[in-house]
Length: 182
Image 1: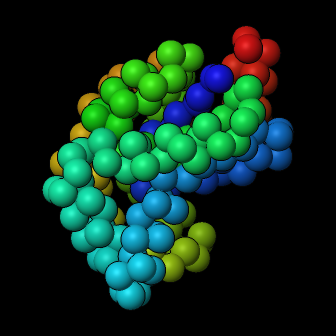
Image 2: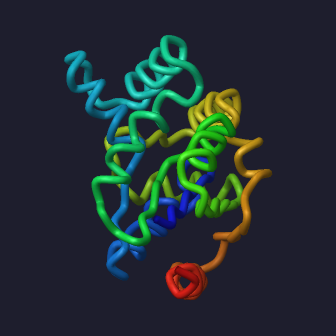
């Protein structure tokens, strides 16, 4: 099984990457869904603060790779020759996926802060932060989890600061290349 992982700061383009993969028939496992389920189970509102607290608690209790470990069964359950895992937040998770899936490819997505901040006001997710200060805090939290180290380990990097059409074309080409290499 080939597993493609994507990593990037908030609003860098991970969700769009996943939507394109799904449209191409590649099943997507979203690591954030593990956290959202834990937030719901705890009876907390689905806010950035609740999601961040629960994610930190899971990592504190079970290690920095806890969410990756919880995602493995969902990835395998797709039964697909190629699957995508969205929402990698740290190098500990990358290490777990590389160990579990020998054919693992990590794609880093980079986008400048002002571009990401503008996207947050447009996408309308419940956990989106809208101020620059809140986005800086969210970036810092995810960097503490090892996101910057995970980005540095990417096998390929895409920059997403242009138009959606430009980014979409690059994602399609990369996914077609990776699918063809199975």
